[in-house]
Each structure stands twice: as C-alpha cells, then as structure tokens.
Figure 1 (cartoon, rainbow, N blue to C red):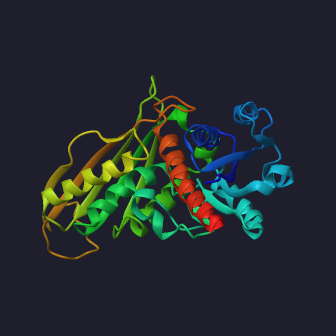
Figure 2: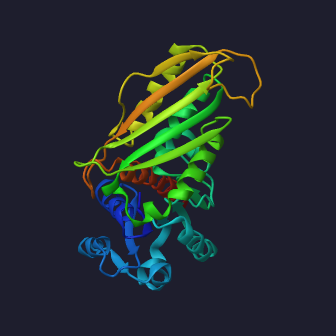
Length: 313
C-alpha cells in the first residue's frame, strides 16, 4: 500500500513533535513538507535534516513548494486565528485538513470516541489537548449514566506550552467546553487550563468531575477503565492516576445544579488522569503535546489507509 503525502503548517513544539512521530511511527503517511514563519526555528532546521522540504513563508510558501503537488493531507499546528486563513486557502485546493488548534471550524474528533463518524470531513478538528484527554472519560460515563454537568481541569508544565498554546488559551476553554457537550455527551460543560511553572516540570495531569443522575458505581468504573485502555492504544502514556472516586449527593447538596430543578439523588464522579509523553521532541512531561500529536497521527493514518484503498480500486 503506497504512502499518502502530507504536510505540516507550524514548526513549533506541536508541529515538531508531530513531524518526528510521522517519520518514526507512520506506516501510511509520507511527510513531504513543513511550513513555518520563523526561518530560525528549530522545527524547520530539524525538518531539513530529515529531508523534508521547508519554507518559512507560511501557507503561501507551502503552495510554492514543488512537493506540494504530492500533499493530500495538511496538519495545522499553528493557532486558532491562523487556521481560519489556512482553511480558506487550502480547502478550495482539495486538501484534507487536520486541525490541531481550537479553531473549531470542522467537526470535533476524538479518536476513541467518534473518529469513524467524521473521516469524510474536509476539515477535522482535534479540540484541544485537555479535550483529547478528558472527553473520552466524559463520553464513557455518559454511555452508562446521564451526565448533567462535566468540568475538567488540565494542568500542563509551563515549559511544554509554546507560543501557539499560549495564544490559544481563550479558545481552549470555549472549544473544550463545547466539545464536552457535543462529543462527551454532557448536558453542560466547563474547561479550565493551568500552566504549572513547577521545577522540575510536572507530567500533564487532567481531572474530570461529573455530576450524574446514575447510581451504578460498578458500571461507571468499568466504562472509565475500558475507555482508558482504548485511549492508551494510541497514547501509551495515558493512564488513571488513582481509582475512580464516587460521592453520593441529593437535591439539597450545594453542588446540585439549580437549573435542573429536579429532585434526585445521583453520583459525583471524579477521575484523575496522567498523560506521559513519548519524548519524541520535548521531554516526557509534555503529555499535552503527545496526546494531540498521537491523536493526529491516528486520524491521519486512517485517512491515508482509506485514500490508498480508494486509489487501488
């Protein structure tokens, strides 16, 4: 089966990590080009050493590269604002986009939850690093118990947050909150991100709090543990930090959602996750990079396999 040509826009932390993953791990993708805007970036220098065509003129420069004719899939690892321009330039040219920014132009996709539903989309959005880590858990719980409210807290090492990540913080909270509802299945969602300056840097941690109207702890625990195994198939460092926690609550509980106006007893569910990276570009503490680029690789592989099969037929 022949490989499908792809390109990366963005030569920062996420783009560089994705480049190394494609080169080392992909069976179906051929990275032929990388575009950035900083001619001195480490990502572009590494790409050149790996034999990848490069440009520091952004998406316009990418279009001018001879290798662009081979590109069928474009990964965008820049910022939400920049992605809107990139999408407007590339979609008319028939390129498939996989968006690693919180721009949310295309449908939200989390591989372990809904990848097969959107492989035909022209622009696939990967939500955020916190979304990739926590939405699978909310989705797992919502399959066995109605989730009235989901709140997630993503804590990442400051050193793993590059320029693009910092530029996207407002979009992170809005996009992740939406996706907790649209993909995770919660009735309401809230997302928080913390850039932790601790030294030495801490491995990415994610906390998921859910209020459910279900009462079967064993079902919820089993669904969460199964989902963790499924995510770990493509993000090896994804794991539960401790056992799933439960607390019963009633209608007089101060954390009960007043908007529901219902008199019920349910469960507060707390799930504590850790995401250790494979250290392809930044050290292992940068699980926030790893979960995004691992999800991007998983989806790109599926798109490339489909494209190869269609070509063969």
